[in-house]
Image (cartoon, rainbow, N blue to C red):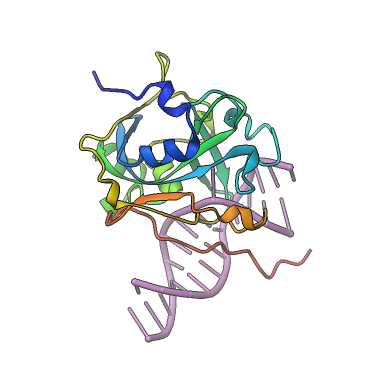
Length: 207
DNA sequence: CCTTCGATACTC
DNA sequence: AGTATCGAAGGA
């Protein structure tokens, strides 16, 4: 039996959970990814969070129990996956930004044909695709008996000295300076960590 | 390696 | 109108 992380792991402060998720293995739909990069979003108190402006049909899952997936659709074509954290009502979550495929390579390759193995789950939308996640899986639990996937602790413990932090990617500051907290966590030296991109606003559009 | 930029449709 | 992105194209 795999050693699945219990709901109590996720029902803690989002910054603690985000840091400890590094090196953990997420399994879903036949593919296992070892997480190398994540970001924390602190719900209603965080201008960078989708939940900052309160409840909506899209963000409903974030307000519920920990250990469930919050999957959103963005840029007209991409899905990104989060794991809900904290007590119900806090609406905090950890965005899964990148990982290394460690099992289910054939299925992963079928979902993203023609890409190098390193890039299979490099970037949040690529990771979601590799795990077969769409809006249809919003609310899917990774804990408990009815789970539709699982999260396991690292096989070999993560060396704390390799953990890095920095500003979150693509959070442009639309909510003000507060959206640039250093709440991105990654493992130094991992080739699967996504390239940092500065937020870019579309120009040339006239309303 | 780096940079810029278009695709695309949901959300508020 | 803005977006928690990606991949192609072109330059160094």
